[in-house]
Length: 126
Image (cartoon, rainbow, N blue to C red; front, side, top):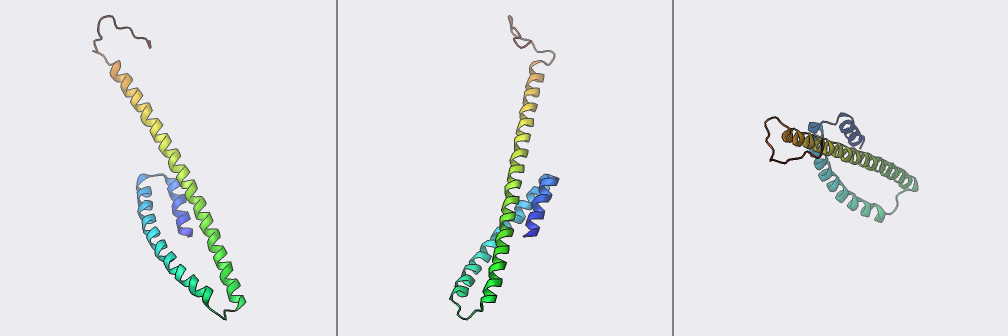
């Protein structure tokens, strides 16, 4: 789980497209592994609950490990939330930059030398 958090933090700090694509591919693989693990855990949990004679100390130890896993999952969720917020901010910034470029290109096209306007043209922006 710590690897997942490190990968997310590296993408946020690096911000390059290749690293982001690599992370997406890695996350798809991790999702498949996690789904298989969850199916296995459901089966094991059913056996655990049905098993008689497990000492209370062992149950308490397993409960602590489960709580620790839940805390790590919560931390990973927060990392994902930060990564999504970062990606949205980057997307907004790129969109604004593209709009600015379009406006500049349009202005250059309109005012390039040699453009003959129709008679009576008035530049209202001037």
